[in-house]
Amino acid sequence: MQVLAVASDSPNPGPLLTFPEAIHGIIQSDLNHSAILQRVVTMNPEAVLSWDLNGEPCGTGEKLFIWQLSWEHLGTCMCMAKNSEEQLFSELVTISLPHESSIPSKTSPVKPGPHFSLSGGSAISLLMPGILGATALIGGICFTIIQNQSPQTDITDNETEEGAGAVLPGFKSH
Image (cartoon, rainbow, N blue to C red; front, side, top):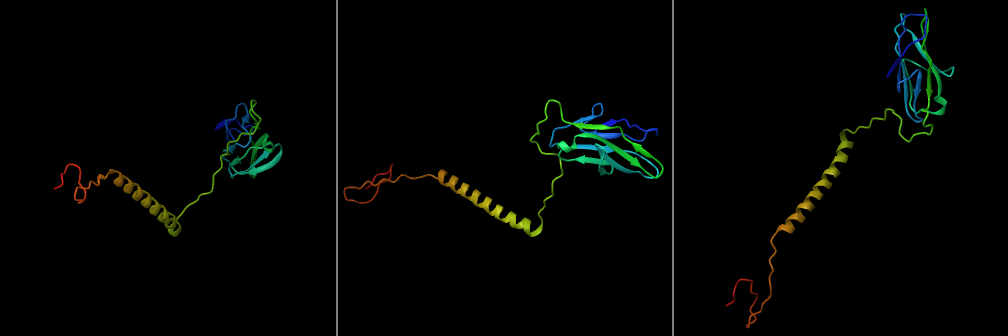
């Protein structure tokens, strides 16, 4: 994150952090990507932080998250920190598209997804068919390997003059 200077009459009111990095007060990001602005300020009494985008209120709190940057999010952003004794303004930051590309990208925004978990009976009910299927697959493979490796005897029917049975290779009949 880039730290930007803050415009105020008060000395060192706190930095403004941005992601992607702001260069000369400009954040460049593709449409559908995320942008994060953060204001770190220490005031006594504690300050209430509010964010404006193009002169309109757009959020409160220490961070401003823009999950999927759209055309409506482009413009000038500022943070105001206000308590009962003073009011501080951050430097203006412009959110814009990169010069070489104004076409929305197909990448997903950075946004925390839902957390899925399994426990108890539902986990066991999913594990048992998987274990049984894997056991059947391994058993079938072992059976095939054993069948292919076992010696196969070639028995030929050679009838003798008396018509008495088979003769195995390497043996003589009486």
